Image (tube, rainbow, N blue to C red; front, side):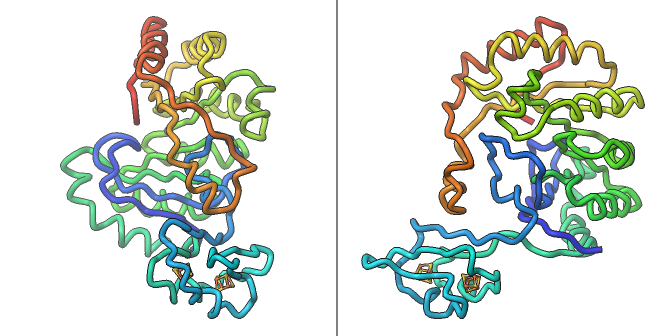
Length: 301
Ligand code: SF4
Ligand code: SF4
């Protein structure tokens, strides 16, 4: 079983309980305007150029057999993405790590070998592995094989999902996991479509079904000023969540601009937005509102 990941982080402490290894599966059906990991949206390889590291030596341009790279008069490297075949030659030749491919084809065994290095930390901290993305259910075969193998190895698995996946697949993989980290962004269907590209109907339905089977859920709420911070949205969320019995906690995740540089490097600025990060006063006010409604809330994951 093979699949595509775009990152694997050891010692993560914000992606579920304890110390974790977080595996980032590539590909996502949503297109959130505030995405922090835009390199996780396309299920394919991508070419990333980091102009701030580039020495403008031109080695990558000379090595590219497909004329996908060129240099302007001032030496700036420009990419013609329609010509790139992701051979990786430019990455291999660049001394400054200024150009490279995003996305690595891996087997389940490759990932397990990485995860095993952290087993001691899992045992001591109550941690485990978190599958995230992108959207891990966008590669359901890889996600399921990983969950099965990790469970067999006695390692706890958290599934971090947007909930936007066919119900059968979603439920099967969620049930096999030890914990579901469920992203809930906003309740208004039109606004959800406007900011993420998809309706939230399937997401809310999947969350309800998940609750019916009693799976433990942490809600992940990305707080983005001007998008989902209004009282109307917070109230609708609290009303919805208070009807569920399996939600253990809400993680309020304040927006930050960590993804913005990546939009530039992927040449996708037009597809994303730049928002104002919330002040601590706003974060506290949101947390206090949810707490006032009787929900367990924590800032961060
Ligand atoms: S090889 Fe690297 S440093 Fe040289 S021009 Fe290409 S990206 Fe820039
Ligand atoms: S990955 Fe290959 S085809 Fe694409 S720009 Fe680099 S050298 Fe050219």
